[in-house]
Image 1 (spheres, rainbow, N blue to C red):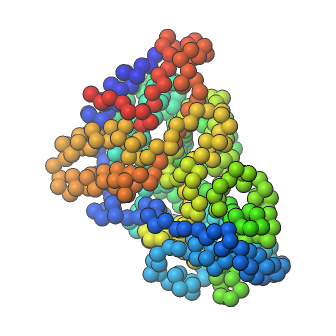
Image 2 (cartoon, rainbow, N blue to C red; image 1 turned 90 degrees about the horizontal axis):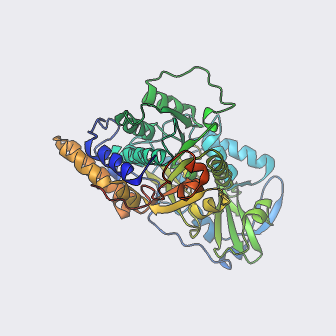
Image 3 (cartoon, rainbow, N blue to C red; image 1 turned 180 degrees about the vertical axis):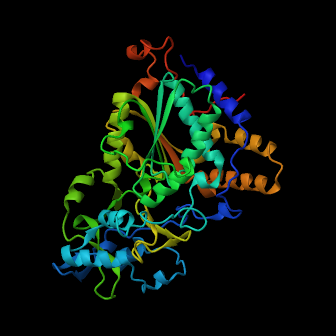
Length: 475
């Protein structure tokens, strides 16, 4: 039996009693000013008429005259501030660039989705595969690396939802793209603090990671390096029974297709070799509609430029099916929009914006998440909440209370300064506060007061209030 008041009591107790235990060993004094992979600068797109001026290009497979303008070339990913690196002058020929040039010469221009997939996750040369890109010495920083409070509040959210489902005897937490494992580490510390609440619950953690390098770092973070030498991934344990899923800055790295409206209709944006500049890539438009154009562009679309992430749609469908069948919940935190943005494809290196087509394999690639698309792809199997701004979610979760507790328990001036800087970075609308969003998937019975199946197990109906997405009264 779970009531809203009981969950409020537990969450408030965690926020008020839980003392600072992490020494913030990964946080430098200058961390709050680091780049969080979000750009302030709006980048207007050319009109369909501007995009219609003919320009020819050639590849080894064909010679086409297609509608693409210099304005588009300067807009798609080439509107970034120079980082001052060697790559910006076009002279850096990376192993990935050589691989892509060979691929394009062999098969013709590639989609932006194929480009992202190769650049980020190619087993031999992919950006994510062989180095740590997070932190002050990396290319970008994420919220869990900025402040321990972020991970603690996310942990409390999962405690709240676990309680709302009736405190099942198992809690399977599945994180997609866990980075260094910092967020999971903070969540586990919350679970440990509530040991008496979980004394009859079997908690298991499942990390879904494509990078061997990051997997090693996660093992060091969470287990001290003690891991099984062989793991059977054919049938993941978390696919059995209710699971609670977490995806923080995960969906933004999934490959996107880009489409441009022209006077000839919708055309997909492709990437080809620039015939005028050796060892350089450029954007072009497909000469006719591609299968992706016919499938992903909706007839009611009003924008002139659209980005679609099919991988995100497939993944959301799988999560929705699992939650519908077995219960649980999913929490997604990312920067994104509600179907109203156009060109968001960008790159970061050394905490600065970087040309997406220069020195591939040495910089991160990312695009804003379309939450309206994710909502559509659930196909009504689950209830969705959000997206809501990060500052609103964290405020509803009690970040102000938690900050005051940490400040009261710390006499170290540097630590107090760091906590305040981290709070500002997370909550300031001009920083991460308004740029990042939270989005949740929950089973429909979570909001049904007369669900017969649930009433077989609980004497009281489930509360419809969801922590983070509804303002709770903290006492």
